[in-house]
Each structure stands twice: as C-alpha cells, then as structure tokens.
Image (tube, rainbow, N blue to C red; front, side, top):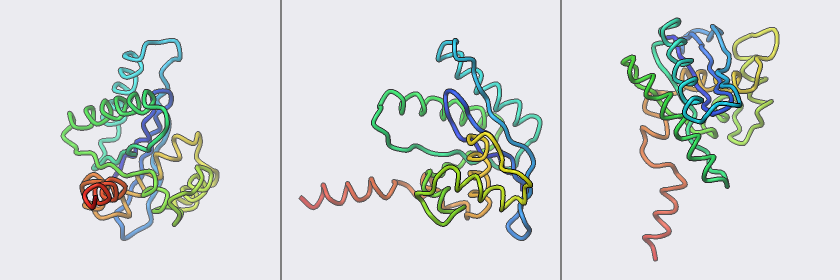
Length: 180
C-alpha cells in the first residue's frame, strides 16, 4: 500500500510517500515540501498547497492519505489558518476519491518513537531508521510527513482520533463538566 503523509502548514507543508503492507518493511518513495512564496496573500498560499498536493496525488496515485491533526496552541489565529490549510489538503484528496485519515501529533510520535512527547529530531531519526535511509530526511516538515505515513501503516484503519470520535482531552473535559 502506498501511503501519502501530509504535515499541514501555511508556510511549509511537508509530504512523504511510503510503501508497505504491514508484513514487510516499509520503503521510502519520495518526500518534500510545498512552500508558497512569503509575499503572496493567504488565499494564494492555500492555492499553492492545493496545487502541490494535486500534483503529488496525480504523479504517485497513493492508496491512502494520512494527515496530521490539530495541536492546541495559544495563538487562535494561527490555529484557524492551519485548519484552513488542512481543509484545503483534505479537499484536494477527497476530490481524487481517496478518504484521508487524521492522526494527532502525539499518536504519530508515539507510533514512531514510543513517546508521544518526542522531539522533531527524534522522530526524524526514527523515520530514517525505520526506512533504512542512509541520511536523515530533510527538511523536518518532510520527515514529519514520512512519520505520518508510517504511523498510518502501523495502525489499524479505525485507530485514528477522528475515526474514534472525540479526542481524550475533550472526553475528559466533558466528564468534568457533567459531574458538576
């Protein structure tokens, strides 16, 4: 199965392609980044992401697509823009007839390193080890995208946060509120 991993960003969206089936070692296919020019409007940035992922989808024709989900930061505007970028990527994927699966950053890190709080450099190192690469995949956005694809290969289809429903943090909050 050929899996495309996507690490959304409005400045440097990473992509990584990995081939594997769970019974044999995964192999590296390709990786890189979509980088919109800095001096363009936000709408144009989104178009660059859409066009970039479309090109990868048409060139490689993956069987599955896995995308990194949201993380909670302090900047609501940045989070909203990241959500828009993720939405554009998911739309491009959906238009090809492939459904995307979303994994949280902690799920991805845990799948590769055993630690949901691992550093980007630790994930990068484990990606290189897992794919038997002679050198570390760069840039970090591309190695993160490879990690997302590897995470998908290691997980059953129904194990993503989105397919399970609410995130554990949301469930815990709802339990606290309802117990009052």
